[in-house]
Length: 390
Ligand code: PLP
Image 1 (cartoon, rainbow, N blue to C red):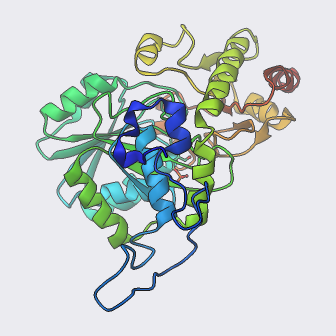
Image 2 (cartoon, rainbow, N blue to C red):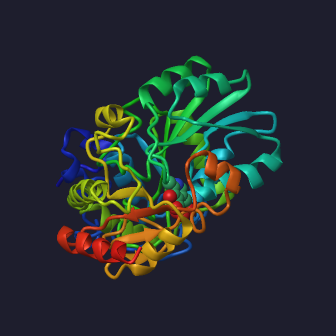
């Protein structure tokens, strides 16, 4: 039997860990798949003695298997799963107190910006938003009371890259922690803990689950003390996922390496094709040599995913493009096996004020593609016929 993640699966390859880490056959029946422990409580044999499980907000075996699996995929020691990506980020925020200062990348997912700017900031925690693709900008924003620097890389949707090792050095020198939202890259393509980050966060909803049928989040850390504090908060605040959703993700991560290789290949091919289209003014894709941070991206990522952002030039052009697709679907979200197309300014990033959006290049003409793993020629033909109407 393969060991579970606690017994050093880190020596195994990514695909082997994707399939086995955190899991072992059910000890009662030998069922190879981890059961869905759909229970709220656990019977205790006698007062004062239990079998390691008392109440399902605190412990659930399906959730534990998922947490072990995701920790292993990020090359980390501890995983904590949550009911959504935002619930994971919200719990991370509860490590901090009134009077603390947090630096955040300016081009984060709109919901993250809204959580920080409209919810957490009301609790006396101050935020500075900076262009995290510049380590100098991060350094300049640090204050004596800065406790955390939180970045996305690549960013959603402008595909800016943060130099994780360089940022970690600057952040650690100031006595703060570095957390990385790794949702866009997936652990197959980028492992921030190995590059120096302290916390990795994911919207599990996206590439990790990959089948667009649940919402979830995860935090992965190496440090035992941070883990203990987060584990306390996970139970104390209670934003945990249900066991069925955990099981869906466990099934999905078994193919993460196969899916990501296909997303990477389709993404690169479609990005190259888009650069040749006269109706597309600009293509943002870190896998293209024309991306200003291509070399950095190639250094810290092994592939560039299926996420591509393009500038169509106007709201009208963007509208015609997204309305014209037939295989791509117009929808928020990303990272599923099926291709999606979206308009960040009116969908995922609508909660960011227009001036701030425009300052980052997130104009009304920006369209975001999440290239799935359908046959790439079909996807290109679909985009071609949609662009013909623009
Ligand atoms: N981080 C990124 C990069 C995202 O794209 C999203 C959602 O789109 C989130 C975080 C939030 O995750 P969730 O929607 O699972 O709460």
